[in-house]
Image (cartoon, rainbow, N blue to C red; front, side):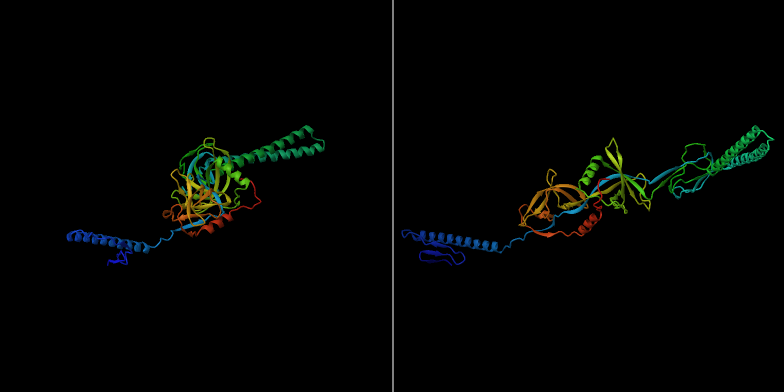
Length: 437
């Protein structure tokens, strides 16, 4: 309720507004003019009171709105740790050993004794060639040997007799020399006949075509009734040894030379010699269950591609790997003892493709930090440059932050971090080893 106090107009306790009292109407106006002016004054006073009331309500509502808490983000604190230097390289599967089954003698194939695609052992009979001609040859050679042995007996007796007569001076020296030479000739003929007999026996044994190595045999390339020529090059079947098995992978000469320089300078540590440092990535993206071990790298580069072949040995007990298969191999070639890495989701990309991360400062304010990234290792990006040990990097919650914003950092839960670090430490070679493979 408005009142007049000491020349001022009071509009009520809520408005807290005083209006200085002024003459409402001059005394010279008529009664109708005075009433009209009074109505206008009261309307103005009512509008001022309403505005004051609305202002007071808005101030009360603004005072009631609470301040929003800083957003919560998950972070990792960067620290040096041993991380394996690994590469994903293409490769093809190759058998450990491969042998073509060939006949050593000619003849008619009368029997095949193996199942195609089965496992065979070294020395197993695979084909049988007609033995009849070689049995006849053996009999003939034995007859020639018997004849030579009989001639040797006669020549030996003659030589002994002439030796006795020569001692009694009843035979000449020439007669004895001739008998002695005849004996030696008979001995040579026996040796030749014996060798012919052994060769005939050997040819007879060759009619059983045997497996030269143990492994899995492929399809039969000749069937019963086929004629094998003497000294021919016909392949009867192929045997491949598949457990263990090779994977030949290729790597550029530049990468291999850089790796060797890093190992020689100590920037990377060598893996233990007996460590299984390779894994296979199958066509569906899964890993082959058994790890492999790099045996050596070739000493010759392919002049057309500039690639060097590395041979890896993998166990293959269930014959899951076949020769000629295309695979990708993830190879660990060294250990970086003081590497810095962050999870993949922490890396952001600018419009021009450069990498950057959100970092939390000492006052819990976030800002973007450009970084130089290396390869991906175990779902982590290796950081070549841009981060120092102790830096707090935002991994989760980047969608709700902006530069300069205060955040609430909480540690990221990583279940496998300690296990990965322990594995990397276990792969280190003894410090006494030096040089690159």
